[in-house]
View 1 (cartoon, rainbow, N blue to C red):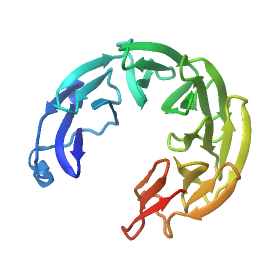
View 2: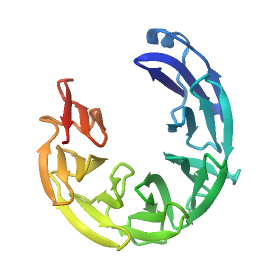
View 3: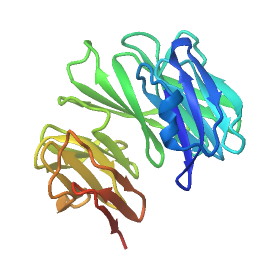
View 4: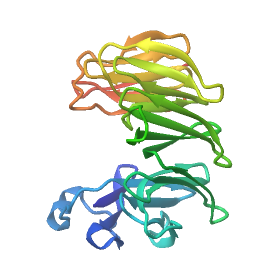
Length: 288
């Protein structure tokens, strides 16, 4: 597994994950032509890699790991290793939000722990457990920590969304859904949770446990992407549209032809959307 780092379209470094021995080896390379990678890099067994950047440091781990590796982006050297508290557990997801790291690790086939780590204080803050469901993914809203899970045999529902206070891990609300919850079909906007149904998207306010709105979609939703302001991109098995989730209105279609088996690139921040269409043309949509 190779994590490559670029700056201004130039390759500057690579981090190699030796998955067979649960170790990470630093491979320092500067100004190498990308075509030469095939000469020495041999891909191994695929595993998910979770990584993010904070304060010029790269935080990275992978599925089944038991620690988070930290490299400096200034010199490429590893500067720290963050170990999870239970050495018998294995990593399932990592999310970096401001100066906090939130992770999911598995204690058994049906038990997941969610922990918060303060980067500046270098200490674990709290830990919560989801014993009846397999939490697969972590999201953060403005003041909430969100866990997306598949329900276990003890529950009659199919999917579970757990919501905690982000500062202390106190449970705020728990949403049970009868539809299967994919990790790509839940997103957050402000402190509102948006998740999919079979042919709809649901807007849920967890603090009051109120389902604000349910919007019918054209096709079965397979992916959600938060947009600026009150917009969300909904990718279904047929189309990709921008929805106004606040007013419950479908605004416009992103792609003339959309193939869900070949997902197009899409990027969004507070001011714009950048995407590539079926003709490999780059489009930018600005929000004023």
